[in-house]
Image 1 (cartoon, protein in one colour):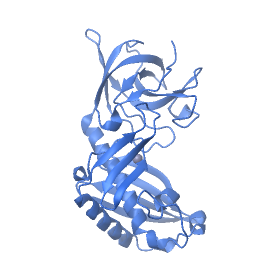
Image 2: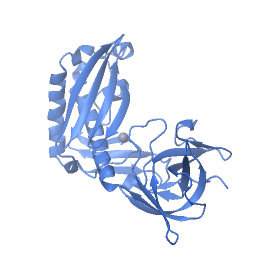
Image 3: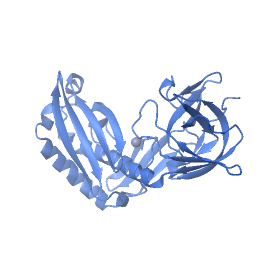
Length: 291
Ligand SMILES: [Zn+2]
């Protein structure tokens, strides 16, 4: 069976939760799973290298008489150089690398009848998607509010964020996890951040930092600013950006996830911090909740 020769067209960046497509390849997946690759899908896969937003939940309806609805157990990025197909964590290159083709691999239970050429309808759990989209938009908003709240803690210039504030989030982020209606971001304030001019004493009073961040978030959500995802092309590996028309100006952040269509969908957004001193560094966990 031929490997895919073009990226999967993805409908999730514009918010779609259903799509119709054709099976272009079926491969053995991890464990007892089979990887189904379609020419087009609304199903958001987890990214191999920046796995912040988890995969959608949902089913593939195989459009043959009496065709089954196959549960999608997981969805990952697949990549091929034309000779080998790599799945998920085995993909050796970043999504978008020249000369590679990237696909959404829908992992379904083995033993199900599905073959190249089958027409398939993708149906995503819309409530789960909506909760993750709200969580992802809240995550970006909180990162911008955090950068702004910490702008006085820098003694040297560092690259600015999407609104021009010193980019604490970009400099200090370790991991980011999108949750339903929220997110959890882990930051590390160590030697390299101190050398770049960041004063760790800024987190001596995390409750005060949260107060400043939450005041900024309150102003922004009250604006009801619109949110959209811009894509350079319809394929999985296209460059995409989260764009939010905040009162301070348009904020644009590279992002492959899904999002709310406006800040009015978020309700109240607030953050809290936990700090922990680890060898040579202070670890800060920001938990963001929306609603
Ligand atoms: Zn994002």
